[in-house]
Image (tube, rainbow over all chains, first blue to last red; front, side, top):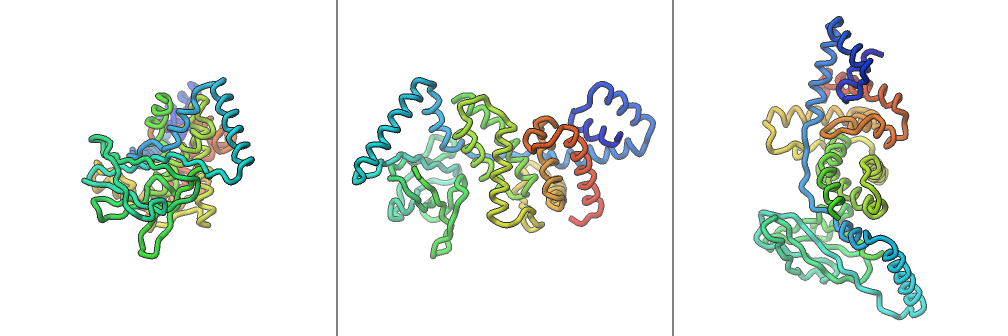
Length: 182
Length: 159
């Protein structure tokens, strides 16, 4: 039971009574003290700080649009329902195109392009977002599933690190797969 | 938007750390981290920012990934050197790789509970209980046992 005090101590979960018992045990029991020190050392190793440099996911901008509170939400929901009814009523209507922003963080390159099934694999230029290393392009796309990859400095092909689904093409390149509006 | 940006900035490294300790895989951890934020914002973005909910989403995303790939534990070969930070010394990087490898030898439940408890801005036992669906008393016992098991694996040097 007392042994668990070590983890409570490591995780800052001791109450005052438990702190008293912990300190008394450290003073009285060298084995307990050694175990505490061992586990502290292990914890320090396991707690090695980690960081990841990834842009905020695209969905955040959608959330921003949605964050305007009621009655705007109700209005938007009504509008969406009306659009759905219209689409059902006129099935021949062309699917509405959606804007999708593709972003990649590549600070070390001079040029970034995107090519995919939506462009018949013709590279489209991406715009550098200032000095912060991000490249972006916004493309209007009908709902559907698309394969794509980024081309850096006109040669290196890389999949989108922010999209989990990928597929290898006939040439051994790894392409990302994204679903827009479906 | 500002609070969401702050939530992302404050939470991404913590969540990434949890996922790295769970998988020892840099790319997978980064992808799941980002996917979790997307799911969180899509479903709960209008409410207050809650870390336990974010971690629960990440946990589910990771379980989905494991199920898809039919594996719940990674092997030594999966432990990537990139999981360490460039500022670390070679010795520190090696030591971190060793402890990550040892983590992969723990049972998934033990690895999970220890991954949640460890790291910068670690979660409280109460929050870990909310995430895993266990009582605080249960968490208290299991975390310590998981730490002891990890120490045994490290001591045996079979990592």
